[in-house]
Length: 88
Image 1 (cartoon, rainbow, N blue to C red):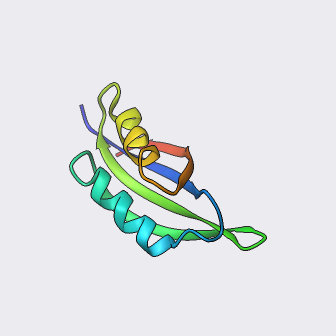
Image 2: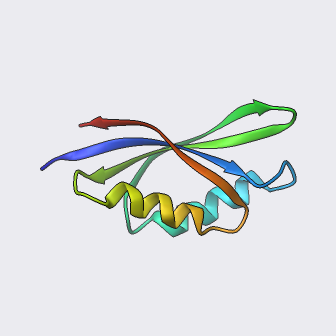
């Protein structure tokens, strides 16, 4: 088995959420589950921005779900979407 690169889009609960703080809290929550390759901000519109996480996880059943669940449990996160999964 190899690894997969997963692109996740994380939407905050509101425009008032501090994205820098949210990024740090998410990073701490998923640090043991995967390797974080890159984190970017993406403007959605109307002042709302999302965090785009590129993470590397083992190609095992349930690993992506566990990362998504860990991110969802962070206060200030509204929604987590898997955008892309690529075998590396």
